[in-house]
Length: 499
Image 1 (cartoon, rainbow, N blue to C red):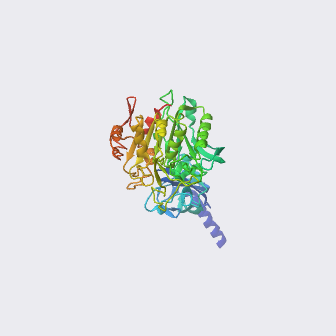
Image 2: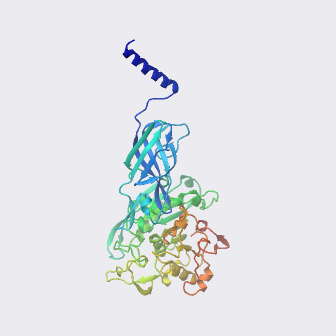
């Protein structure tokens, strides 16, 4: 018997044995592309998963020896499964050419380099942006028990987020307006994103909650607005369930509209962040944007339009309401930068500044007068307002902003005015993390705003001594009480406010 025949027989025997054992030859599978799954957290966005597009479908994954890095940071894989292109798991036993690796999300305020954030903070504009690149490296991902796959790719332009996708309406509004500083006409455009649940359109009219972002979330990409502050939390069930339709208490939910300014809400016309003691250049266009959106959606209950915002957006919440006090049903200004005091100005109307640019002063110089005067108090007297602030806020110091503004309102006899005042802002997502005191809006998005300050104590105490910050009491020892009804949740209170 010749050697060639023996070799062919051996090959045939091996093939027969492989077939009998149910195995198959190795394939040339590979990872074609990598996407990153983005989720909103109280500290901002994070990459909570990676989605791998495979060259060929597979039936199993093994991550026991896999190593994964995002933005140069090694990440722990908490879960893996076959999925669709959006990262949703397929049915058990079903093969797929997509695999999703869920990641453990960590956060450090002191050492942000390890956070692997997809955001980059631009120090020249003081705004968040998407990182210019986001490298992802996957090594030794075993598929079908036999082949180890590896891949490196820049995934910054391959982003997936079910939370962002929930904001189905994306649009803009443009118009020509008079600049309050230069008195010249200028063309302005505001972008916006809206959450419009289909099930709401089938029933009674529903409320609208408008969100105005902080300093870092301006620009032209509304995803930055939705993720820089955790606006995505407003569409989650735990918050949506607080809102009910006008004539059907069994139907829950609210529309959410997030509007974005190209610069800052506190921009009074020169493109810079003001002191909160003037009129925003976006006052008229913001109101026109809101009206146009409401008009385009007949399901919105025009008697229950609520306005909320943080920092810059907290300023704009009060500024807009002062110009259009009859439009809104209630306000929730948070860490509001609307100033109680007025400041010195240059001949051209811009603010005078000193060399002191430390947090909380920004170099602005008080001129000894009050900006929140009797006329403003009278204008807001009948409008329901619930303030949120933290005592250790060093960026927008409460003693110059929210505290005296609130005291002036309640001292005047205005009712349905509430203040949740916290000592500090600890994390609810990450153990042992304390955020900047300025980030008091986190309580709002975590659905933790409940207790309020004792109104009578605030009124009857000299200066600002009647305020008592409290984390344990969720902002204060009292409950917001309107018409004999007490509220221990800001969203329940909002839902009951009608114009």
